[in-house]
Image 1 (tube, rainbow, N blue to C red):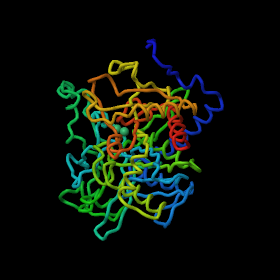
Image 2 (image 1 turned 180 degrees about the vertical axis):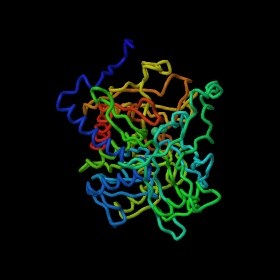
Image 3 (image 1 turned 90 degrees about the vertical axis):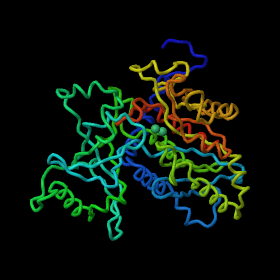
Image 4 (image 1 turned 90 degrees about the horizontal axis):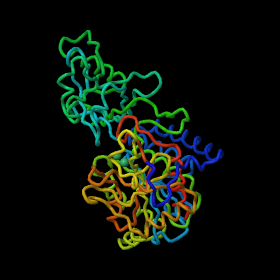
Length: 461
Ligand code: MN
Ligand code: MN
């Protein structure tokens, strides 16, 4: 480091006084609790709704008309939630959106997952999102999701991350016999079809065939009332079992699974829950499926976003036609609230340090993402970037500007482009992580707190 920067980016801890440090540590305790409760998109969604109801939000179906100060939410298929605080201005003058995603990379069970081999029972999986597969072996895993039994009963499954629970595991080869494996490319060290989860090893005493599989089916039937065919319609996800925790002697960081993007989801959620009154209508959206391209009816490309916004327009103005929705979007602004990569001293050469994000230097604004010459990005307008920069400075939000890696080192995208396509001003703005997409991602508590301050200031304008 030691290069001169054209604008000042200071480590935020240096300017934090004792009172602010106390706030930062207290905030991160609640954040850690949210991480531990919301380890899947369904769990993150239901926990967000629980916190929202506690803060006075209600389901929009309970309100025929909406007025300034009203707080409502719409849930989309249990995996995504749209929360709004109605502003004093006419909604068509624009909404302030903060949008984050609550899905994270993981292992999904296949629809016919259960099998036995070598006197053990296992689950077949299909991984979800961009992962380094070798990071997911020899690691305690938990399981959560929903199962519908043949008679239509919904069973919520969650096992492996509560006190006293057993865990599950994808095994790895011992180094003594790994000569051939270790010669392979990292992408092939663990093959997708080797991501099989070990779930049992006692045979069923009454069965002659498939006795290992049968023993597990009996347990599942007793516990959840399910039979093998019920897996076909189930959604079961495996994720790291370990709880999120403090990192460092100074406890300055949070380590844990799923911080991409629940760090931005929680800070955005907390900002809207704390918004009492606002000029423009404030909306926080927590969406699903970002890690696989924002596809499907629970992702950001779903028409649900337009439906929810149209519903707000209809309930605040008493009328609705398409031009009202278009006008609202045209006047709206959005912070696409997703994580960025912090410079890692072990791999600093993938970054260009003048344009990279650092841990502890505050929330990161990213004018554009994309890859290979800004391909696949929403490039935020100078006017909007200036407005946000000014807002953060005026509200003492510690912030920095960062690009995802060196030019042509790789790249990635966020939901920004899909919102921008609707004629909304959008800027990517979130927390920088170390070890992104790994089972143990790391964030600075100062950056987490600054994200909350940033989103709160955005709503409070
Ligand atoms: Mn993300
Ligand atoms: Mn991601």
